[in-house]
Image 1 (cartoon, rainbow, N blue to C red):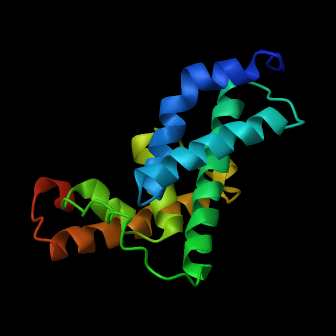
Image 2 (image 1 turned 120 degrees about the vertical axis):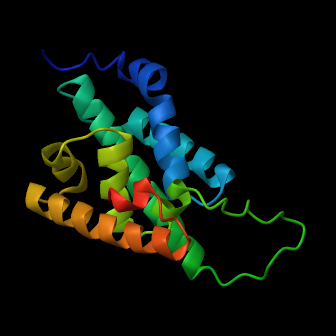
Length: 166
């Protein structure tokens, strides 16, 4: 399969991968409004992207990489802001104790590897290409991430098959 037609890339990305990009953004952001902003930023970057995509899988991987990077940028920016609390803004929804909340509590490097592998179905090789690390580093992040996830779930009282199978 040749490169994707530059004129149709944006329409293809919106049609096929909007849900995937939004899920990845929600997974990495603490608020839905932030995730929506990230999705807009990702598609704006796609409109300005000067390169070509070799395949749909290349496009999807690019979208996920940009989404994850943008979420990390947003997280860093929120820690650097020195602003006062605005009491009129509602607090983010509280965690409901789900396994997904436990995954979100993991450090970025483990959370991204676990999300891409278990939620998006990528292989170690593909995750390595998306995160710009080796497949063995992906394997190590998944191993360590599962251990941390197991500890979090055990701490939260999840002595279920889910935590034992990690």
